[in-house]
Amino acid sequence: MSTQHFDIAIIGAGQGGLPAAHLAARLGARVALIEMHQVGGT
Image 1 (cartoon, rainbow, N blue to C red):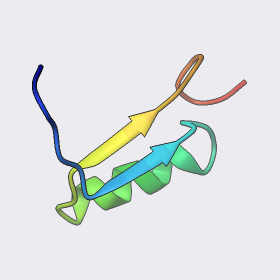
Image 2 (image 1 turned 180 degrees about the horizontal axis):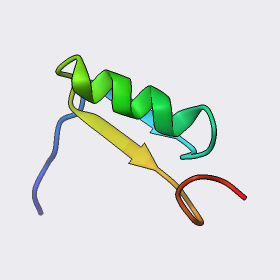
Image 3 (image 1 turned 30 degrees about the horizontal axis):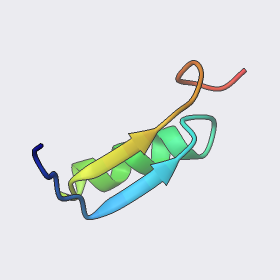
């Protein structure tokens, strides 16, 4: 079993989570984006 390390975990890839994850990644953070359904919200 491997271990992964992230700087930030964002739950939900909707209207708020997806841009937040994108910005954090652009700033150099290792991002875990967790979404149960479709990315982008409903």
